[in-house]
Image 1 (spheres, rainbow, N blue to C red):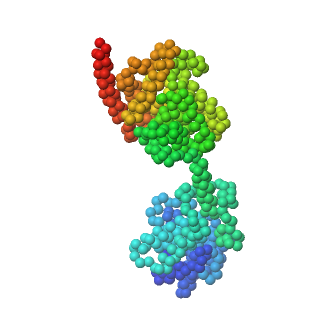
Image 2: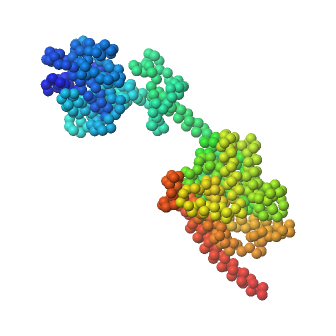
Image 3: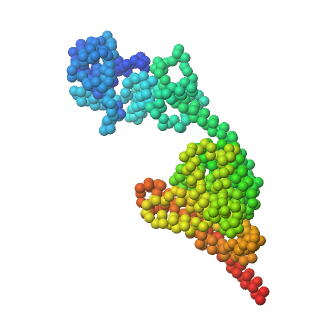
Length: 617
């Protein structure tokens, strides 16, 4: 309605428009009833046509007199009755409404493509007069079952809102548009499906065409209730996509129930442990407190918590009970020799430090899920069954493992070999659901990372990474980056707050002194820092910080910055001149504070030794 039909006066057009608003049902076509005083006049006019533009799509509409309307049909012979000037190329079926005593119009075709240059959302254009005007509503009473019904309802509401802003609108028009919109919404969201259910966010972007036909059929038949034939409305003979959407909702609900059941099967934490693990993302995480409240099982809880947080249990289908048994066995292996330093608490501390580096610097975005899994696993087992003595001691004393590994990275080879031998046992095989390719990649990463914790490879690792960082291109090898990262975490306790670092120093020196006592008993020369009578604790820590720790941490920090920048810019970009990413570096202040404290203690030790020497003289 609102179309300036050819040959009509304004009064006639208004009367025709008023009558056209009357509709019987949603499924009936829109009919223009013949005005009482226009019969002869309309019969003398040729068939009229106009083009209707809606949101960039154009529709060809043909109006016919009662005689023409009665003669028109949907077959080819009927289409020949249309005058030549109105015939169009066939892009779809030509349809018209059969009537006997009433004029009518029908959409003959719709454009196949949307016009991107269309500015007006809704206009009607006549062939001869080229008159264009906006209309109040589209009044194309298509079935509410069609996929385009939602778009049409939205269009009606938008136009109605615009008209309301401009001034008063007829009550009938408001009622008609709102009724249509309500029917469309009720069709899209049936009451029986909407009661007691929430629309899942996961379905907001789902497109019907993305779901294969066989999947639709299976989901519909499995997860939806079948409607009796007597209860079907018109248009529901074919399965609608909303039924599939409801089935997908049901699938999501099943998945959530599965996750809840899986979470119920997870290892349960004591309340105190659960509370402390909330601060596991902090650099100053107190691993000693966790050891106390967990009754000597810090590694089990830290490892399980992190593997669960990163989604490793779910992504690689790690059986919860087998993982719990594996971690308990690993923890007992760390306690085998009752080492003061290289024990389960140290393994838990290194694992938590690695987590901080991955999480707080966003470095984890550079790694795949399998690489993150391998990195955490390497941290967990990197000192498994440590003997409390150094590689040099094993070589000098000729132990069995030194002979087995040919004096090269003796302990590191033993740690990773023992861990994978444990995985060969079915009751501890947490990798049972990995594919062969995943297992080979996983094992390769773990071996390289653990072997890189050998201190004899320290300077070579730092030098190699410096060389890689000296060129502008992003050519950092992932395996070398992961190895350096674990190595820095392994020696990171001087970069922790003093309360933690001082305790670690005490435990490490006690372990060294135990080895020195054993070397004296075996008649072997003392290893460095193993003679309890001559070792200067403060000076040794200052030297370790200045020559080992700080240079390593600085290179590792530069490496992480380069990786994060290049990962955001893309592999083909030059990353050297890009601005550095912003992330916290709490270790810098801790290193400075600890160094200063050791310098004060070194002066005190020096004065104490001087006084002792004066007394002896």
